[in-house]
Image 1 (cartoon, rainbow, N blue to C red):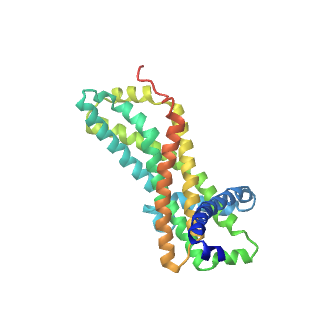
Image 2: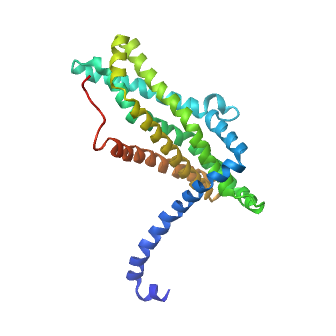
Length: 281
């Protein structure tokens, strides 16, 4: 502290990168510990993981009817697929090539629309719910009680939720992709009157199965990132009920940024140098 008093500017200059490193390193260590606890979850906390998968997918109690992640993600991707068909048919129609709406749906749904919408749905449902649950347990000292019973709270509360999100995202994203495809097709065929055979021809011609696999990988990465971000904010929530609300808000904001960042980085990695796209055929 003598140095801080005698050389305040130098102290602030040196202290700034140290604080920045601590700010970045604390979440990073939390994420590493959460991922490292997954093998223990598989061997010791399988029942809790199954319960969380069911809660994540279908919701709990009265919210199971309208608030389950399946319902939310399905509705969002249906709306996104229909909107994509409307915009694609109208925009391509201005050029006289509305027949390519099937190509537009196959290209945009897989690479951009479905992953981003599914990531937003995950952040708004299972992510926010996990933050609120862990935050409530923190302010009620339930996490400290687990520690006093020789149960690792990081593994039991965080790693289980990360693994549950990883297991739940595969069927959830399958539903999202199918919903976006169906919404685009029926919007184009039923509302705009385009021939179903014409739509299916261009859709199947330009739908690359490899893109679907990469899209699933992107969704899995999004699920892991969303769960890690939300469990971090919930695990370290403080300040009573108000603090839990603040933690949920901060977690949603951070996870939405992470979803967009994952989409950008994965697109650059997968399609930056070679778009894996051929307009002929």
